[in-house]
Image (cartoon, rainbow, N blue to C red):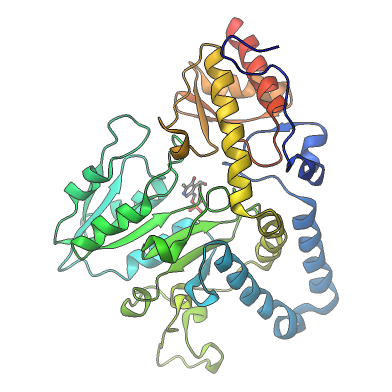
Length: 391
Ligand SMILES: Cc1ncc(COP(=O)(O)O)c(C=O)c1O
């Protein structure tokens, strides 16, 4: 049987659906909210439990032969996901901290301008709103359609007084994929640096950070890397990092961290110069476990499955007369699908009372399928939304 749109009514299993059994939340719920918080997988839970066991048994002694190596291992393994080296990766507790540390290193005297877009996550923009009145001129490039921002519009805002272009790889408001190589080019053409918030892309969309040419690319565990809260990665391009001197600091950024020398500050010559204080080991271990899924499957295979899921979800939504807010071309769509809703919070509540986890954003219900989702999840969510609308 096919629906009016040509969408098959039944569900087609895909090769990654077997991983669903490793995410216990699916035992009694349909989870369609990875873009808010990735669900806890068994491997992540095991790694976290292992860390707690070691902490309980050995205390601080484990720093020297176990935990220190875990930091190095995580920088290296995350680096491989984005085509980079361990030395290109700094650890941070949140995107806000990572962006603020980078923002502290820029010279706004000769180059006071910072260019962002209206679709970026507010925490990125706030770094420079907080510096207005302290010599920073913030330009917010508007989106003509609330889905994406043309690179030409960003280029028009960049001038020879621009320190940085800071925008997203995947816009959290629409799921549209931005051409970050093109953004880096327009920034570099005027001598500016380029920072990309890739929190909504790394893990679900292939990223080659060095090939993209961006100077900073920030992502983390919360969403598509299945590592939970408190772990963020700041990739720093090797030509960009050593030229910059942060004006906030902590002992993890010091080249001789264990010299405990309070009279001088020599930053690492790699990305670690942007690290501040002691990372959360619970977050490090949860992320090491979550990363196993991403490494084992590989982002290209994840992308193939999620692209099919997204096209299925969009087609089914359209067949119900909905107008999903997504990018026009399939290859610019990521696994974030915005469905217009008169009262998104109430619609999400109605989904939740039917054991379907989704999210509300202004004017929209946000659904985000990942490799453990199947087409039946879309059928269930859209049916439930239809009963909500009919009331
Ligand atoms: C694109 C994007 N950037 C940043 C954040 C959050 O940043 P922070 O780690 O500072 O909470 C989110 C959502 O949690 C996001 O979707």
